[in-house]
Image 1 (cartoon, rainbow, N blue to C red):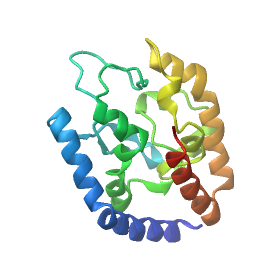
Image 2 (cartoon, rainbow, N blue to C red):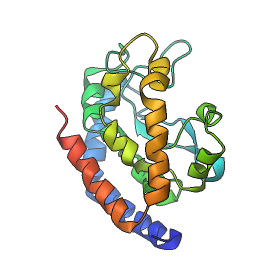
Image 3 (cartoon, rainbow, N blue to C red):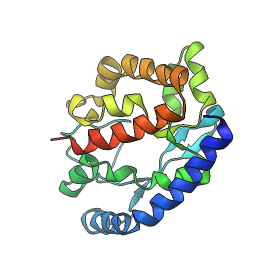
Length: 199
């Protein structure tokens, strides 16, 4: 899929998604507001295309910490609320990223946007990943759909590098090599299947 066609696809279907999922966005936002208060959204800075900083929007699932926090959190993180667990389980926290896709910061399918601190761990070969728009889903998102269960423990960032990082980079590079319109469509359907097959 060439970049223009991919961008048109992303724009059209992100707008449709924002309209179709508007009731779900509203209900999720209200549930977060009632359980956690303001702000409703978590808006971290991530590395976008060409390593430019973008703001990625997600529904909050955790209480705000008083001190320094890790980049990742496991399912056993005490900050995650009951509502937050459901929001995470069904990936409802990712719905606001439809706006990122509409704006052009992200695509439906592409390597997940990484925290800028982690880009320094990319090899020169892996820097090609940053030539693509980051996506809501990719091969790694599907394989690690239940990431929180792998990161249970006192140091989720350490566990992320021990258990996830190398494989995730392999899968990101796989998408760089194999990307096409039909691969994107396949990954979108596999993402929905992964979400609804979670226990």
